[in-house]
Amino acid sequence: MTPKAVFWDMDGTLVDSEPLHEAALVAALRSVGIAPPTDLHERVLGVSAGPVYAMLRDEFGLDLPFDDWIVRKYSHYLPLTETLKPRPGAIEIFNELRERGVAQAVVSNSDRLIVDANLRVVGLSYPGMKTVSRNDVREGKPHPEPFLRAAWLAGVDPADAVAIDDSRTGAASGLAAGMRTIFWPEAPMEGPDGAIVINSAGDLRKQLGL
Image 1 (cartoon, rainbow, N blue to C red):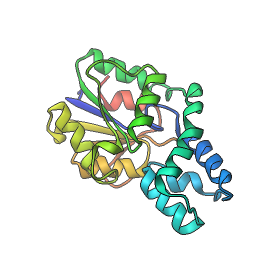
Image 2 (image 1 turned 30 degrees about the vertical axis):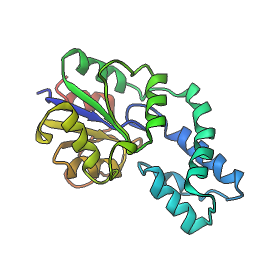
Image 3 (image 1 turned 180 degrees about the horizontal axis):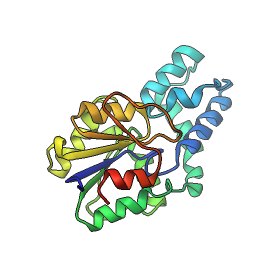
């Protein structure tokens, strides 16, 4: 049965932007003389800019003020969006749900600048589209607030909504919001307790009753 509402994570779920974020982060770190750790990808996946900055400051000696750091990182990221591709199958499902009248929103731990840039590049920008960025909430994922805000914007009970995310951080947010939560990681892995783990767009279609 198709749910009343579907709320999508963006980076890694709707669009294949995680490699771009990693490349930009690596370039920004090297530009200030810091060697990126080998487990950088795993440590920052699904985490918003503030906690990533705090980790880099506390563990690797990043001494730029946050505002200067984020400008540097985004100056590396934004040119890369020209190469951004959708995650295979995801946007097709988004558009099919839209045609069926299912309420949807994009719920991201990225800043508004990045949310708008990414969605514009892949053609997911239209009047009335609902999006939640890290700038729109007091607490980012894994706190439930981002997905709860999406439910409020869509006018639906969280219990009637599905949250879809590729990171454990994001899936934890959906679960905490009381939503049926689908964990769709970029590579097969165990999900958080209570999440439905899938490994393909075909699996996602079945879970959404399409």
